[in-house]
Image 1 (spheres, rainbow, N blue to C red):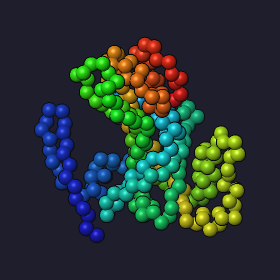
Image 2 (cartoon, rainbow, N blue to C red):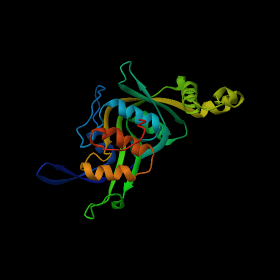
Image 3 (cartoon, helix red, strand yellow):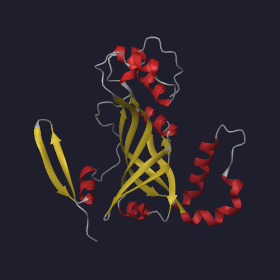
Image 4 (cartoon, rainbow, N blue to C red):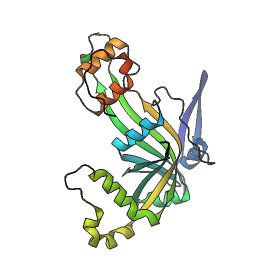
Length: 250
């Protein structure tokens, strides 16, 4: 099978950009070399305060994109995932399941390295919230990129369904359980497979108004509607907010 090729521009400091022409599979292996599992936080401009915030973000926004690579190109599927942590709260894996018919199953069996894209709250911030006419629009967000190695665990498929359902049904007046559909399971389970995505690195990007001066930040927070993004922004800017009365939830 002929591999597609991509052209990338790389830039290091003051060195002019360099174009490289690689097929996607080679590019993936170059960007994410194999080796022992390691947990790091990359040096980004808006890193999370700690890895616990990434775990909370995943818990609040479990539908993530799982991105893989194969000889035919990239594969991507939105999947609900559960964070698995050590006793000290360190994120070690993401647990989920997918359809066996999904082409990514074959891709990930051939190449276990993958990316998980965590999409948290985000919003466009309009200048109408700020009194300075020279202030320009921006976008605030909390997101994370998790580098993983995917390991299929078919023996845990039923457990993955039970755990996800219990998590999502928690707090309801009459929580639904998988056992309620016990008669359907024999025909459904053979078409599903569980996986555990072992975490190798975490790249959190929590912008959340952290680049704003104190004045504009307070104006933005005063004018914003309540919600998850406002909660996260308040949490990350507590020492710079004047009289914002909101309950911090994250």
